[in-house]
Length: 462
Image (cartoon, rainbow, N blue to C red; front, top):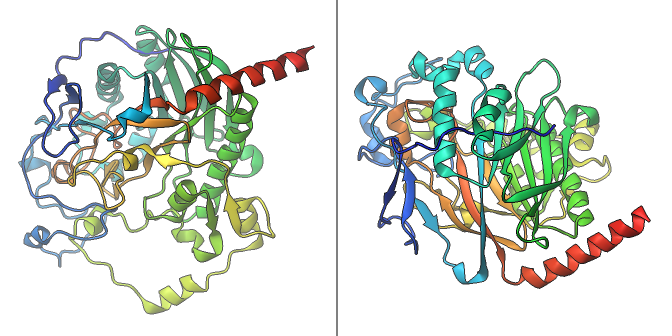
């Protein structure tokens, strides 16, 4: 289904130009940022930092928590209308990039129904910030201000409303709703004057026994350059932290189909966007970044790394107590026959592989210590009452490189919000934004592959 999206471009209330800061890599052009909060407080580590800050000791670590976790600041002492800064940071490898650039956004926008049905995740969030009218306005203002070329959204249950807004700004779009009783899905939008859609398809994972999640794949051609083609994927992986076999199976299946499409159109480069519901320390992240994973080295229930990301744990208000017998159970945990098939697609082989050499755009572009973990990934891309950490990514394959990314919000500032969404942030996730360029070494190869693909298609038609 072909559709479109965006509204007026008067976003002066949140978009401004700032010079580069000492914590950013110095860009060659002015740095754009959008504003939502800015109070200077001590940095606290997130789930991906793997440590705690001594300054957290001022909060009683002996306090217990049930549904509402203890946060001494909460919103009563914090003005959510204060500014949050996000800065563009550039790569050190600009000389390797061509001058033709395109920008991609990945954004889990928090489905209206999910916000309503899971109110326990937003105990510290004022009710007006959970209303769809607020979220839609703030999200569309953010997207309009960013002015990206391609937008990949997850948790979209009001597609027509988003599309009506974006189409006025020159976007076209497609939508795939999840199967089953859920009402949200994935949506992809692109600038009609910059990209031609050559082929698009959606994946229903239920059809291959992998739950009700869905994904999208689209092959684009740059309008002003027939030889420049690109495959973009958009996925919202299953949330359930214990179902690592299903998560891995969904991602494996997406990559397998992406390989087929990429080869069909001349081995075009790939950008994969989405909410992967897996942390940077997880086995699933290792699979994406290294192209293979031996699942027998992991407990299926721990494969996504989400279970240790409760805000109270991440911020050091409570400490983990590890039962040694539980460790032994995990060490000798056997996968069932069915789980191995779900994860790898092959009951006789515990090693799962994919054909791409993928890199994470944020890990590839150096950021501030207040926003990044030890591996370069954001300290947090999602924050609510039961989770603080990183699950969203923009992956890319060979032949393209990220030239800059919009850095995420410092973890100490996120902490003071006591949870998202807020007045200026319309979701419980942060948007990820990366500008990409075709690498200079890709030019000649791309032209040859495109010509070969066209010749092959003509031969088939004849």
